[in-house]
Image 1 (cartoon, rainbow, N blue to C red):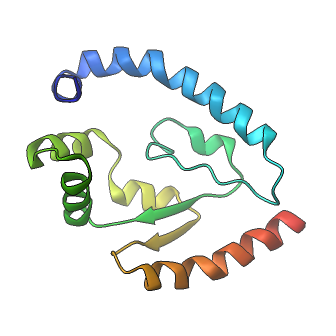
Image 2 (image 1 turned 90 degrees about the vertical axis):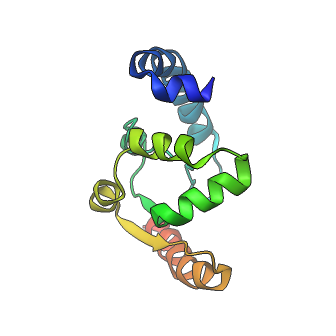
Image 3 (image 1 turned 180 degrees about the vertical axis):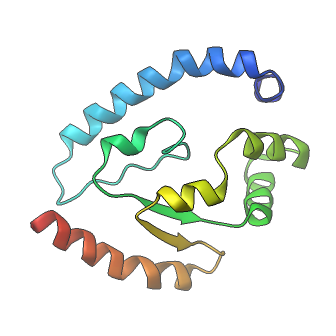
Length: 130
């Protein structure tokens, strides 16, 4: 099905018209139910689906296209052509970087990732408190 959806723009639009409103409703319910100082909305299509409008601040966890392809092929067993089609259907990294408030490069080194996330966590706690 994935292959068909990403090879057929019309089928993809139809599927998205069914799934995206339901996903948005669920996200809104979960955000309203959050009881922590701040909530994290994890969404691969945050900007494409305008889910960023549900947030006060955005963080882009970014990775190179090459690394995205490597991770997706290992995780899902997809072939590289399918992965490239999925990436091509999404907003470009550059557009997402322009829209994001904060950006952290997830280059595969967890220590590097956590070193950048720790101060952001504190920043977000401070933002939530004010």
